[in-house]
Length: 453
Image (cartoon, one colour):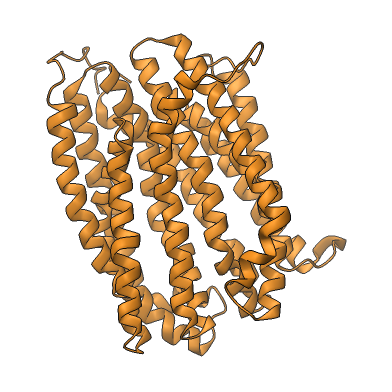
């Protein structure tokens, strides 16, 4: 963390995460491709379920981001007692989060869908899907937490195996459960949910194994464990803004679905397909960020200014390249992308235009996404929260609503690049501030001699 050349270190840390994120994106897309073969209503139900599914991910990832940041900083400052406390209290918080979603799954799943649509088939499909995802949410909570513990200690290669196994298992089980292959009952949308949670549970168990057998920096012993507010507080200081930031995405998606339903449920299906497809573009950047965060946090704890700034520069440049590839793909072949989801003529007409317009935001998003993770790595998750609130709630939803009043669905999609423009401006403003207040004042310490290239 403190001696390897930054470019090589970032590649070593981030490449396994990028690959695992691409695998994650693939199984998310494959999941929806299979569901689209059931019916367009089934695809719409999964799209309407996405805000709640995203909320589960938001809470689990938010807690894990807080643990990742605190654990990495503790390693950098050689505070090994706090390293252990960070891991144990983070796991405890994940258990609390799991219990909350299990209760919601049992008592609130149907109400969640009834508030969105009165189409009985969509309500039935969606309720079954969400109940399975929430009641078995311990899989995703455990997977994310134990993977972030591995990442924080520099063992990102193992997360490639955990996420890969989970994704491959999901892809294999999807058609078996959905269509009733190999003697299994035909479960439809519920089968897609069951395949997903089985993959998550498998990844969770494998992540535990790697932490126990391969991670010598963290001892997962809960003997005489008591929750510690002194440790939980810094986890939440960083994690809560990240959690809320991702949860805002759920609010935005829920609100956008309501706006699009005023036109047609097909528009909701298109929006859901867009979110699956864009994961191929954003997931590699998130993987890059997962490799970047512990590097920045460690070197901040060790007061190595130059290594921090170089890591940020390389990360931003790499993210922009990913986004340019995504922009070109969405512009040149949107019909091909939609064709994977058995798109009807109406879906193709709406979707091709939507993908081209929304992908304009990719040209700006690379910088903003990396900047948000830099803020979190340096303990300023509030900056990320402010940007996310401004982008998705203050700008995107109101602009989308105002454009919907024209009665022209095509105009609604322009709310995305407009919101991204505000996001990049705020990101640049906060990046300048965090450099002046956090990075520039670091004592001018020479980093250890780097390992030769």
